Length: 408
Image 1: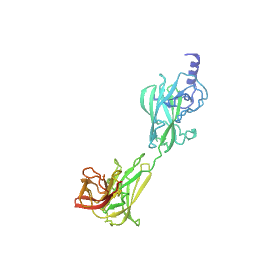
Image 2: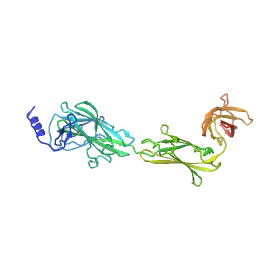
Image 3: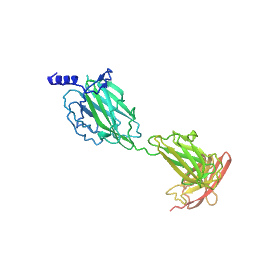
Image 4: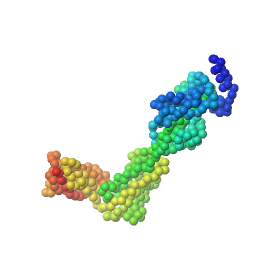
């Protein structure tokens, strides 16, 4: 060992600044003065490898466009030692959007052989990379994998014991600080952690159907709930039924009736079983839900209540051109039924059986017809009649509607 290195090592062993870290391999406390180091300014922006080289002179910001900028700490003095601490394979990557503020960050720390990693700390910022907004250094990171004494992977769950948290909808940052068994420290770059802005749940009312605007007097409610980030709070779903005067008729919650909401499918299903509703009256349905981050949303639908086993049937568009489109036959069922749909010409001759005793759920249903007969031939322009036959536990029910073909 040359004279300069001997002098430097003697200086390291005889001068200390209290900053003791627990030695991971021996359990003893290691004290040293803060010898700051910073990354090479030539680090690749594609791999984001951040190196901390003891003795590196003060360095400027990295040119990386992904905010993997180096700390830029200025050492109080410069030491030239063959001791290197590097930070690699950070996770999550800067281009990866996190769906919640609960994020586990990872880093692999490498040292030279004979100088094993003895400790690691981290700090975070949720409002930018300014030094002033970083949290204090935290020491609750844990070892994820020990590849060797000189290569250890750490992880830190945010929020951790100190309850520091990343913020939604913006760039957050984490910085790592490592020490080897020789008491030498280095700092990683400031890694960006991107967290999505959490939108409130999306609620789509499927039944009653908004297009038809009608429902049967045996009201069936169905809705689809989605929340991309946090997920739906399963106890927060609420169905509210009001009359035209905004007087409440029914209020049903998943907290009291867990069966109305299925978390795996995100579906709400409920059949009204309260006091009889008035056919011909208008009602208002409100479906609301809260996600697991406390954000609430609701969807409102007004509809007209109709009586009968098949309260409504509407072909659309009518007239239609079979060369360009099909006709949709929308109908409402009071109960789950086996359904047949037939089309007749003006003379009463059956020209096409669209479906034959197919099972359909209560509520609004829809089937299509191409405007062709049994032989696959296009029918002449004119008026036709559509018959919907529904068979349920009460018997067979029929309803008719006209439709028109007008092709050029």
